[in-house]
Image 1: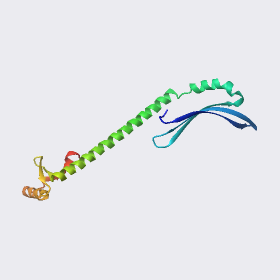
Image 2: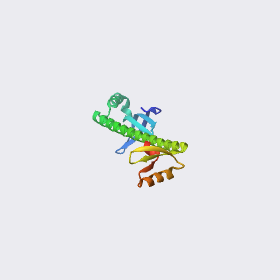
Image 3: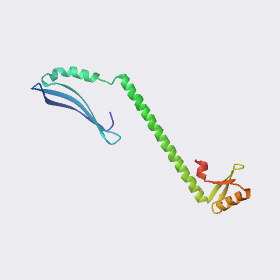
Image 4: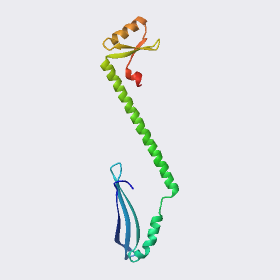
Length: 165
């Protein structure tokens, strides 16, 4: 049973007309109602019914039948496999969302780090080395280095791209 659900046994009579003849039936029902995670409600209903005149006599047998009811083991196993698969998929999605959130946060922190320090990283393609330059003279320094080398040897690499591509 789901926590927070409510259930009750209900005993009621109802008239049924069959072949022009009205017969009163008595029903013992178990009704269970609960809120689902998607904010909808679900109701489960299980009952035993008999003509009212023979209800008391039939009730012990109906209760035995009612209590013996269960989902077939193969069906139950398949439902459990499907539920486990669904839970694994949900878990994978949550992990991916969290990893992406962490990556985005790290990139934002890298941007702030560069902003606060007033520096950026410059990569030397020829030797694979990195150096830090002030953002105030960055474009001028990189242009000057590349002009001196005669090709685009130096590139500005944002810290977020270096740490969290």
